[in-house]
Image (cartoon, rainbow, N blue to C red):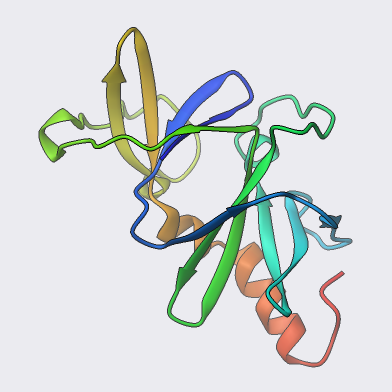
Length: 150
């Protein structure tokens, strides 16, 4: 699935994608992690990582094109707020090239690599390491202790 965050083009596999939904009732959390929010989703609250903020892009105002990509893996549900979903395309493993080491200061585990589409370079994210961030663990540990993560 291809999408935008800030001015960047990104993509990720759809293997653990449960749904792309609207960020209705998205609430910023008052936690040490300023890029984590929560969203009511199918009878539960899930953490949502605001990827523009996490990746250091200037955050714009909420707009109708924004979506939350909801990922489900095991017992973990987590959302990724993106600016716009573009399309679903097939990418063969041979098309993926490694990320240059100095392209980002973020953990390289978050990225599967780069792929070229037309004249665009798309950064491929790996959703599972992102879903394992401390912010997500904090959300679930606080919630499981009977608190309201927010």
